[in-house]
Image (cartoon, rainbow, N blue to C red; front, side, top):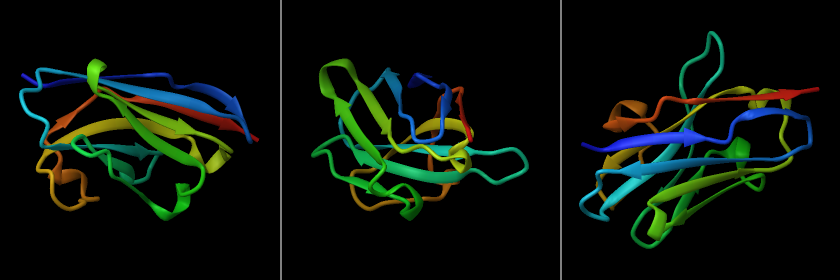
Length: 125
């Protein structure tokens, strides 16, 4: 059974940085995509970025390009989301998610099979 556990959320001032981690267990192959989504109160879950476990290719939504960076540690089965220059509008619960399939990008949350429990990120102005 695949399990995802996020950590690293917290409260930060605008312009600050946070690094989120998503540790995966129960993985048996490398042909999958890990993604981060976020959900603010009264808003739909929004795609943030994704990384291909095999090869490390990344894809980001426009609003975080140049500020957020995805990386992975193969030995630890962990994906990191480095968030810099944070803005109040980045405030949300951040979720990591996994879908099988090494090809293509998918920003639809319903395409992802496994989800973490979420971690709160709050950016004060």
